[in-house]
Length: 164
Image 1: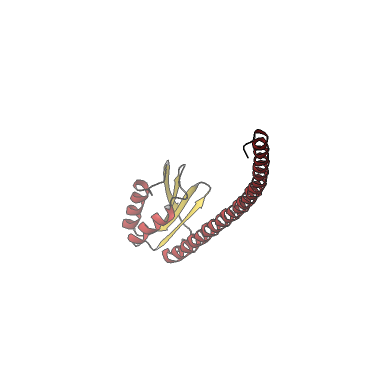
Image 2: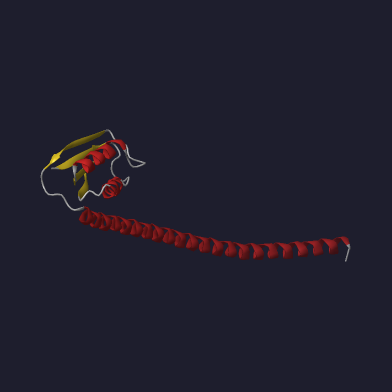
């Protein structure tokens, strides 16, 4: 007779729990194993001989992944078919690879967003530099006109006071 383990707590998922339990099931050479996230909990089905079953239940009740927060572990009998460890392992690997692809795509999207923001910042920087260049030209012509006027006025003053 197989067993069903319900693991409850505020942090059961996204902490590597299923992989953690699969590793122990394989270590104990349990032949049938599957684990699924259901709601915010995890449900584990497994079947093994009496020693394997006792050791696995003891492990599930006493060992947790590093970041898991567990409130309760309920164990009950389970009479239906349970997936082989090998089949479940393949399924979990494919699922985890899918998550990796999603994370990778999300990272690429974020990178694209950052590049677009940088492009916008560079465009704004170029606009600002062009404005500054324009202001420098305006300022230069203004200063040149003022100096020319001052030089003319100084020459006129020197002429009137006889310093020429």
